[in-house]
Amino acid sequence: MTDFIAESDRSVLERNGLADFDSLWAVQLEAVDEPNVERGGWSSVFRLELDGAAFYLKRQSNHLTRSLAHPFGQPTFAREFRNIRRYARLGVPALQAAFFGQRKVGSEQRAVLLTRALDGWTDLDALLSRWSVLGEKQQQAVISATGELARTLHRAGQMHGCFYPKHVFLREQDDDWQACLIDLEKTRPLLWGQRDRIKDLEPLVRRAGCIGDDGVRWLLSSYLDDDLLLEAWLRRLNRRRKDKEARG
Image 1 (tube, rainbow, N blue to C red):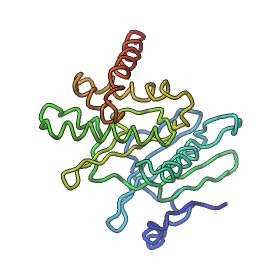
Image 2: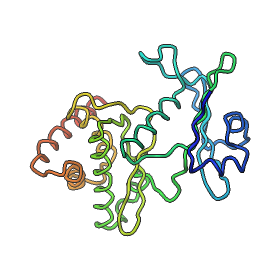
Image 3: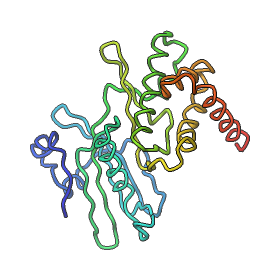
């Protein structure tokens, strides 16, 4: 079975004897959180540091997702890896894969996904938690970077499907802010135009209440790049947000 290894990471993995599925499956590390035991199997995440490079190693067994293409199930990491590669091809900023492989071992379907750690980046959720201490210029720059990220995503014909503040990572570089996405498992093509785009944006806005109405307008202005459309989009976004809040 052919495994994926990013050429930029091959040498560091080879130097440390971790350039193959079995080695990454066997390496002893401490999990960063409790294993996910949904879907009839388990999935765990570990931090791996090698020669000054940092990665997140994810391993799973029988943690499957089913679809028309895979009615008997496939590892959720297989779907996430495909989406990582799709984002890279489409030019959508996102986490980067260093290694991916999967194996059938007896009754187990195992998968390994190694991604580069986003050290030096901060998730939007953390920035929102200290929103009031950020200067107005920083607030606007963070919102603009987030709106531009969403615009790039949707112009590429993709819907993230889990566009929450904790899945948007940002960093300040040379007086500018960059943004990228993680957790791509639920990504799918945009099928219903504006309806899907609103559906993708609404969870972010609902969870970012501290930015206020002006912040939402700034987000949409950065996203739309056409202020003539802003009011109509704002009405649809607020209508969906109120519907979601009413349903709890």
